[in-house]
Length: 386
Image (tube, rainbow, N blue to C red; front, side, top):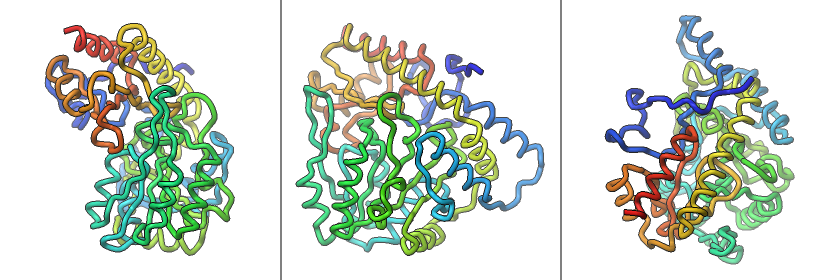
């Protein structure tokens, strides 16, 4: 079956946060897709609605088996279902963990630039943000870990947790197995719990696949919590379903207590059937989705190279988000994004919200029909022309 990713969907009347914009504006911001989800998922949801009963529910054995099967088929990685705990979302699980595994005033370490909502989980819990800045190579348009700085900050007595984004948002970096092992070894050496957000793991567009943290040697992951979800992969964020995967039984028990204490982990009535359908029937849809998004990215890369060579695509191989180097034209991406919206109606994320050197970058979502990407590219060119 060939799936439709070209049809434009009017989302303005759908309570979409992303599309709460003025007429003529084009939002390329929040990480949800402007595509309908897989028809197999819609059919599973229809069957659930047709049952007519919407009482309290719980995640089934079938749900956890579906998660297990998906990672075996898609990523050649396996975890026992006994390692798994249902949670209503990656961010709720991170926030619950920060509250449960650390104390007020403790430091939570991250590699910047990084997904901005992590900051809320830390600050709102009364903890301190500690950042290790990744090293950017403007010639290769790539980031690397400053290993000496990372270890120095892991060794800080107040550092009790680290949030890892695997693959990395916003840079799109796919951590190699060696990199992950090194991070986990250093964290273990200094007694730091690592929470790995792997919500973009299914969206590696080309090159080597990502390595789930739970798939590393068990000796390395005694202090690790892996969080996975179908939400980004299948555009199901509104259904609130995710899974925590923890190998160590003591840490797993503590994680379950954290989720139960700080989060009401009861599934949305459509979350379980939708997730099971996604994980058991959604492979073909995801493969076509990734090919389509890669085509969008290649179009934008070619367009910039031909028409706006001063702007560089610094994004690596994963996610449907692209990280764009605008350092040749500004060192204030917030002001750049503001002017871009005012003059052309194109709305992008300023890199300033992600920390690090984000003041010289913008983030653009390409999870939309190609016609929308072409519109965005045209508006970007117009901005510089005028």
